[in-house]
Image (cartoon, rainbow, N blue to C red; front, side, top):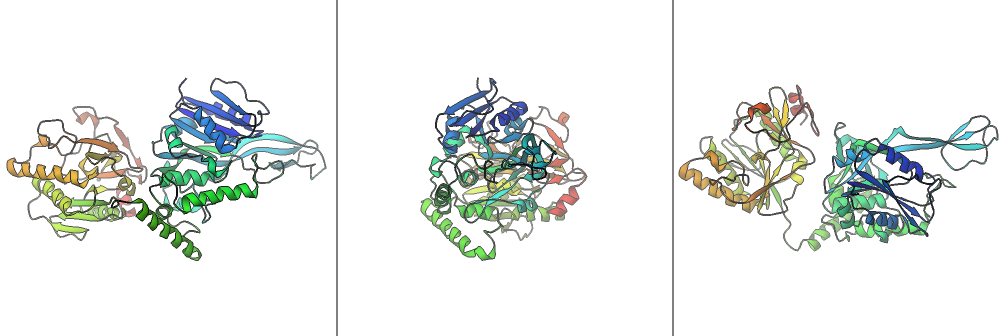
Length: 555
């Protein structure tokens, strides 16, 4: 049978392996299998038979990373999720994860601490929270037995992680201040390492469990750095969770794999070589880029660690010089307006665009202090609209251009995209059309000029020809507004269009002076639009219905 998701569970001497498998089986709601790795010993108690469970047994321990790789080799699924052998999961965790996945994501669920068991006195019923086996009851000297609880501690919740200046794992609770509590998908700098999901192809492409690290250790840092520095995204999915049992008390309640100081040092040293020194062969960004993206990062951006950060930034500059044999690809924004938009809305739109931190080339009918501005001397209309775009394209110098209009509120993640092809027009499909009068929001799948991203040379060629035709014969609606989306003979060129989806949506604000007509009901379309949606709440922005003015004020 072909599965959509393979859950990989490597384990060595794991007394809770059977419970972990049972919990996952109970909560699977999709086409998901489990592949268990028994690294040097059979599970005790044994794992119950189930057609969705495959067991791989190694006579001698080969190490956690090697075992995880072996389990992944047995998978034929699109996605793989590695999870530790002492965890429980949310109902439907698999479909909740897969429904939000993209091929460049590594995704982790929200993590809760797992309350696996208590030690219970058979004589006086005194309880001790999970830990090493007690010799006797501290109250009455009676015998202590394990009483299984196996429930998440809902008060011990983790969503964001980081690493310190030695690349050692740390929690990153401060990150909550920088994200909306209502957002389902949120970016995290690093991970804890006990559970993560990505495509099987990406698992092998990134060598996500590099055995050169040793048996285990630095897994969270490895997953994070390889995802981010290769151009992907590390995402916490707040729609679902897993619960992980921590064993840091030593004795017979320690790590199941040996953790000698030599082995820990080896993993840490290898991790530093890859990421602090920027020697990993798949990275397109240096570590300094990641730290800047999540700035401020505790410890890294503390005044006392300025020398450390300066050294990382210096190595980042060296990375760009060494790896960029050609001029680095640059991005820029063109902004065009007829100055007829509401002044307050226009101010907020421009303020939001500035957050992208990209060079701006603008055209307006009146003087405007916004980027490299030029005044278009003519009346507003279709010719002015296209000539303003062309003017911006001719004055811009960047390789990749994002179109921005005076009544669209662009989320910063809109500008993270980089076109893969130079001869394709790309359109961001993650947008909502919002009615300014009441905040009513709709979406349907369609191409819109205000969400174009493409290489400047391609755009220049298109708009030069389009302006030439308009000046000669006037604007013909059959030309179409959207480059790459017209199959009619009146089209400007034969280049195609493709879609992309930013992490968070952009807002297309509809008001009295829009150039194009707005339709708010699906019955107003001759052909039923695909993926029609209506909402009161938009991820990354919050409530919009009846709250549009407050949303603008928050920008």
